[in-house]
Structure formats: structure tokens, C-alpha cells
Length: 265
Image (tube, rainbow, N blue to C red; front, top):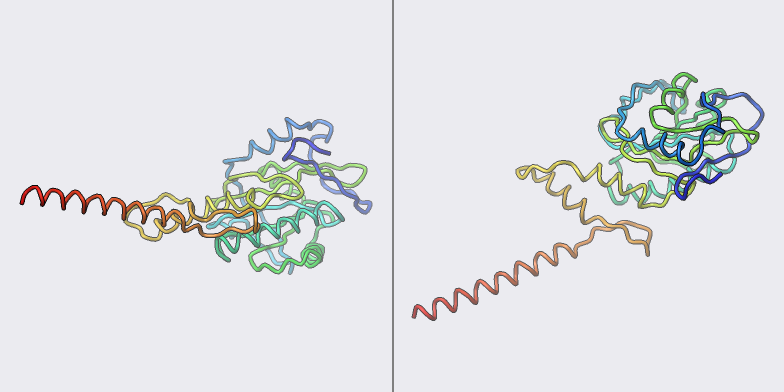
């Protein structure tokens, strides 16, 4: 069901089983309350969670600290919305890798149906979407972990006659583990995903003595989205404008000095 233009509850068919649900009935959530619940998570420091990867190995949430993170919550029995969201997210991630660097951020797809979404199911889901990105992890967790995680990131889901209704939401986390931005929709637009990542990757406070930070600040403002190609590129026009301005000022200075010398003579 549509909540607001960019905020959606998605539903899809699921094989019959009982899974975890939000403690509040779905009917208690409307457009305003769902958006409020989700947006209230922004700025929140996430806790420590324990997951299992596709190989069944334990993975801690803190192991992903240090660089930006995208979190997408899905359930593997979903045959339409969750695969669609993941495929569109994959396109945005591909563009972001090109613009920001292959190792600049991490992606986590987490199965919220802890009864079904075990490591094997997450592996099958990842393969089904063609995800080969080594920095994209498909994780599962127990019911208690999922309960705390969804609350912390502002994600809403509940049982419905068709399986689960849930927010079509991708959460952007900063390097310190805080919620930075929410991106909504089954087909998130590329700039909505890339821009907050770009801000986190390149938008660090700049110290005048640190050349690397100056370069990052330049890349922040000069890496721009081209809707015609659907890709980001480094826009050199800023430097052309600066160079032209310097030449113009230089020409004016030469003219003034030449005139001053003529008067002195």
C-alpha cells in the first residue's frame, strides 16, 4: 500500500509459516506515523548485533564500522518486492562504486524473517539476484536480534494475509554506526542512494594542512550525477572557471602594473 510518494509499505506472497512481527499491529501505522517512526531513527547510534553470513559464520555488526554502510531488510520468501528492491539497489550500488571507489562503502542485506531466513536461504537469494559484490553481505539473525535491529533503524514490518507488509526502506549508516539517511521506495533513484554516501565518503571536515582532505572536498563538489547517462562523473568545469578567473585577474594586474610604470616614467 502506498503511504506517501517516497514511503511505501510493500507486501508479497509467502509460503505459510509463522514469522516475527512488529509488536504493534499493522493497522496502527498510517502514512504519518510510519514516516515519523522511520525518520526518528536518524542520528541514532546502533547497538551491537550478531549475525551469520551465507557460510553460517558469525559476524558482528561492529566489524563493519569505519566506513559508510547501506542496510536493506528483506525476507527471502518474497517473490516480487524484495527481489525488485534488491536489483534496483544493486544498480545504484554499481554507480556508487564507480563514483566513490570500489571499497568506499559496504552493503548489508539482512533477512528479517528469522524463522526462514537462514544462511542457506540468504545465499540462494543473493545468487538469484546476481549479486557478486565482495563488499555486499547477506546476513541472517535470531528473532531477538532482528527485534532490536528493526527498532533501531526505524524499519516497520508485520504479518499480513499475503505474508509480510514492510517498509521499502534502505538505511544509510555512517562510519561510526549512526543512522544518517533513509531512502524509500521499491525502485530507489540512484542519486537518492549515492548522494548521502558521497557526503559521508568525501564530506569529512577539512584541515588546511591535510592534502588528502582537500582532495576529498574537491571530489565532493565536483562528482556530479548526469541523468542522461545515469552515472556520476568528475566535473572539471569548476577548475576551468577558477583557472579562467585567475587568468583574468592576472591580466588585470599586468595592465595595472604596466600603466603604473608608464606614469612613473
